[in-house]
Amino acid sequence: MRLLKKLSFSLFAICLMMSSSLMAQKRDFYELKAYHIDSPAQEAMLDSYLEKAFIPAAHRNGIAKVGVFKPVSSQPDAGKKVYVFIPFKSMDEFMAFEGKLVKDQAYQAAGSSYINAAFDNPPYKRIETSILRGMSEHPKFAESALTNAKSERIYELRSYEGPTERLYKQKVKMFNSGEMDIFSRLNCSPIFYGETIAGANMPNLMYMTTHENMEVRNEHWKQFGADPAWAAMKDLEEYKNTVSRNDTRLLYPAEYSDL
Image 1 (tube, one colour):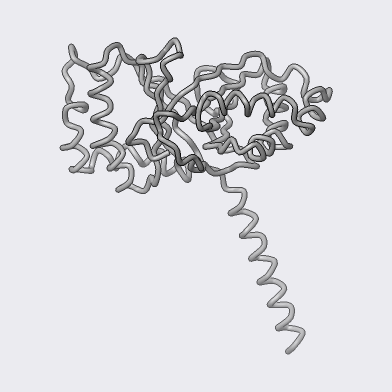
Image 2 (tube, rainbow, N blue to C red; image 1 turned 30 degrees about the vertical axis):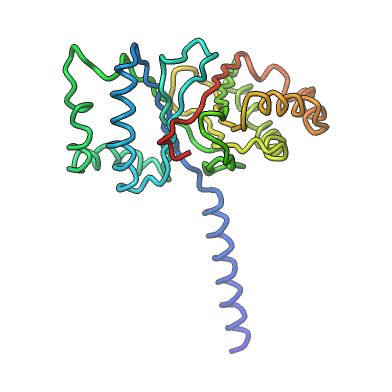
């Protein structure tokens, strides 16, 4: 009887460990939208919709946090884009979300001016969308640890494009093998790291770090370049020629952004 109990307990412990391991490996999916806009009027219409209709509806329908970001004034696309980051626990949740919004009467009412905008007065020019999956060593999005005024912050969105799928995967491996750890150690407070599974610039990965201001952001990159862990990995043969293009966007969060 004692042996049977021990075996039962051992099996239970193994199952628990396997379950915990599977949960640890579960990765978020992200939708990253870039709204292209032509005028302050479109920006105002979009802000009103996101703040008063979309984000409250997302909260009601299981999306705890939505990020809204805009290019800082020094960027060439300042006033021309609005980025919206929506994290999902699974692809099923992503696929079901639009249907939930259709049935959400409070959303339909609050977002009426956006939803029913006239053809000659649209709230945006175009929408560009990427779907990403959280990286294995940073599978979930996180809130920034910053506490200063949102208008002062710099949120850095980067896309690293690979010349081939094989080399792109090596860059993903590089992130999972220590590059992300450097950002954390330097207190860059990352929001997400994601592998693009549908988008315009594949194969590519994308990530977002946060900094109190531009001066701190520049100092963080200076420290990153001098970091011993980076020096040890950047010239390894397996990581050479893994990035063919680095697209960097410097953003700040909208006042109503959750992130």
